[in-house]
Image (cartoon, rainbow, N blue to C red; front, side, top):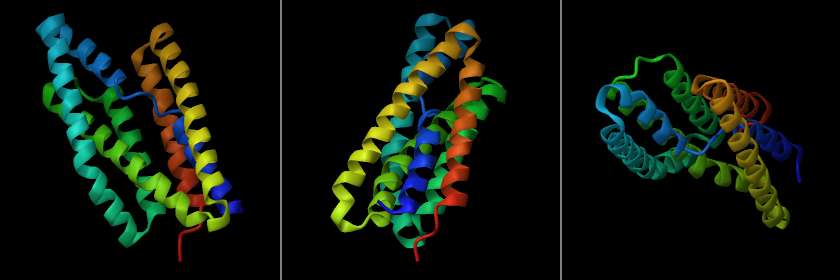
Length: 189
């Protein structure tokens, strides 16, 4: 596999070890809203926010892929990773109001859409046809290991330190992933 692909995988892995399961957003929204609305109503509102996240994710996937086809995937994928960083920062620093949570869940949905629609297509561009199957297998392995590491790390930080520590960890690694993809993967000619 070519060197640019390995550089791409380094960015995907850095991002992946910070990219926790989006269902944790339900937990965080419930925690934020419970003092004001009570646990039951907060849980219902958090699930509604997660539904909004999924709607944004689905609605943004096709436009993200189409835009990547027209303008180049590298810059757009880095921007998608940065959107995840912004969502993490928002959960740390923004005031926890319902409109703010809507924006943060929307940003998280855009992040998920850009990641899902651009990572595989960028991999296809970077891989020669004769190793494309192996390359996709390596990409899936890197993403799987990243998911495992992020789930453990964010969960431990969330439980033993604070939710903000989990978001800080995630934000740092999504930012590192964005930088690696943007600065170390050559753009497609």
